[in-house]
Length: 118
Image (cartoon, rainbow, N blue to C red; front, side):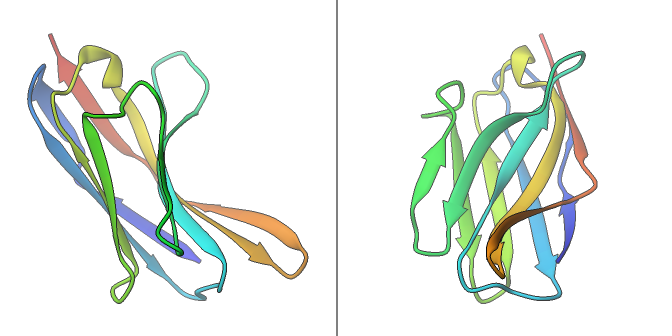
């Protein structure tokens, strides 16, 4: 699975950005696509995910401000980010997770920078 993310940039606090990710290659039956981020000097953290059954989860820190959506026909996942805060700054990574054989496997995109200025 190859992931290509786009849409990062610089925005003022309170603004909005949309990230998009396209998955190509093998598409596994049981999968989830989502986003993680790595703030400066911190560990990578979960942001949001959408399973192929439609279940959606959000990190507490973004719930109510971010919205994740998938286009299953196009194999894309978008993250609409509203009311952005400086603490949302970081490198955002697209993630594809699936059962491959008997194992849970994860695939990562190259990361896209989101910077929110105060």
